[in-house]
Amino acid sequence: MKKDLLKLSVLILLATSLRVANAQGKKPADTYMLTYFRQRYPTRIEIDAATGKTIEVPLPNPMLIAKLHIALSTDGRHWTPINDNNPIWEQNIRDPFIHRGADGIWRLVATGGGRAAPDRRQFGPSCLYATSKDLIHWQLDSYLPLMKDVKDENGNMVRNIWAPEFFYDEATKEYTLFWSSTFEDAGWKKSRLWYCKTTDWKTFTPAKVLFAPGYSVIDGTLTKHNGTYYGA
Image 1 (cartoon, rainbow, N blue to C red):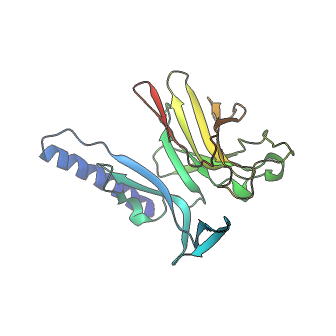
Image 2 (spheres, rainbow, N blue to C red; image 1 turned 180 degrees about the horizontal axis):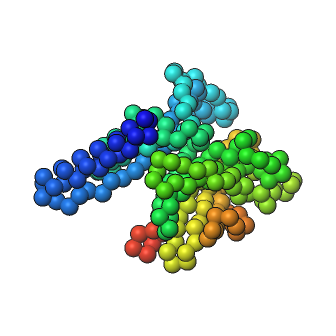
């Protein structure tokens, strides 16, 4: 029943977009998709100006639903959550990123390899990789230990793989995965963007630094428009 309602919600939104466009004598509008998880943190981190130390400020009504949610929009400003803003998939994940591959398969990468992934002690943290043909039925394909061969000067592995994304390059037929990692005791400290490449999602090139400015960076993204790459 839940999956039937989910399909119906998607069809209603798309049909509404089509009906409005036809009524206005226009071509159907593009439909944008937003993927997310839901969280309100219990505290906020601040820097004490006098001492330079970090302090935690309590926040009201903490909440965490670390599962896949989807919302749709026809204008990029007004969004309709699918499934009444409830999870689309019950798998525990954070920072979900979804894109359709050249083969028509929807691919998802997310923070969530964590402690559930096998062999973390040997290979370090992983990110979650899943696939779907319809955005509703998802298959957990594997956990990807993308930083397993990277260590610092003391032989330590990174502490995390956060907010992974990927980009498909038509020119090279390669997927470039990129994410945030750090060797520090908190994921936001001295974090850098790393990357690797794959063509089959089974073998990956060694991880290398993609962006390492003089400050911590997380949640990077990349797109290509008219021959130019843009990152943020």
